[in-house]
Length: 432
Image (cartoon, rainbow, N blue to C red; front, side, top):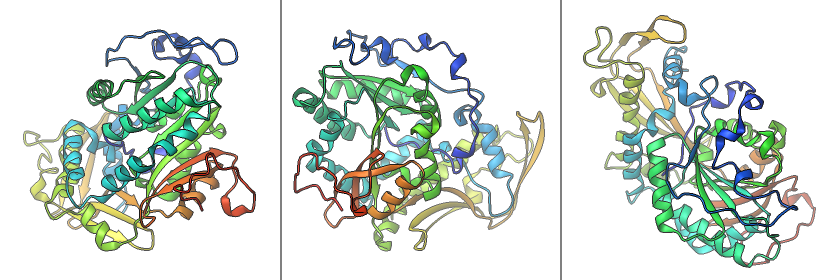
């Protein structure tokens, strides 16, 4: 399952601190304390647990989760001032949207998927080694991930755990796939179990958004466990640089999450405008169809359709056009939907308990989502500035366009003049 994209500005939504009031025993069977004993106490491996793919924890909060208030967020986003309106990108990640996105991955133009996959195939044993040696207990993938890449990483990690002398006998690592779609989570985890034969890793899932995951991992009960985050597929660059830094910070001690072992990021740094344009606006129209799906999803959220009495044609595709453009200054490709005529609708606001009018002018650009292209230096700056994560290792594709980065708290930059030990000294690792 592909990466999950929270809507622009999702990090600004406040969290209600409710975790202390929640009964953590209700997280059974996936709570790590029920899988194995605290490290330094017992090295007993985790007990056998049911392989039922429905083993997941619903970490959504009706008070704070964007997933539970997507209708409200959609209405709010479309009633902003001109030039500030948007469609929450979570609208794109229902089952149909996921299928449309998969068709993009299959095009010959969408290089990020192929290049990252080739890089992982070549360097996976070296990439898995620092994770295995970091004494990680919990491995969380932000977005359930592409099955082939996830299976590749977990299989390599499982082999490393068999031979890693730096890891004490603390029991199995628990892998959690974090995503917003229940049925796709269940299907993905079921297929992942079929593709792998893991001895040292248990497979589980979390139902929720990135911020739901950050809050869940910050629970006091999980403080003793070492945590590693995996975020591949250039998903981090769907945010602006400042937003990405703020979101990463939520997974660090600055936001109450203890024992972060490291972050594994996959980031695209291609600045070739022609190549990027073809990848995000393929000649076959795959990208257009996916982005236009936001209209159908928004109509469902706001209960507007052909049978609606007021504004039923607001999200009819014939009233919109797609536009994608490359912004060289911001190193970012952005997608917009633009009305071809003035559109008006009256929508019931569940949050306010009254009707609100949505007005979209002809030619008004409504933002859907974007994808940044960040160099290795950009990644360093973003991860250090707020989260306090320093680059420890990196691996790059031929031409250095695509990078996989291993970052850890408190580390210094390679160009800071502070000497850092290499994990295995392999020359294939393109550090800087």
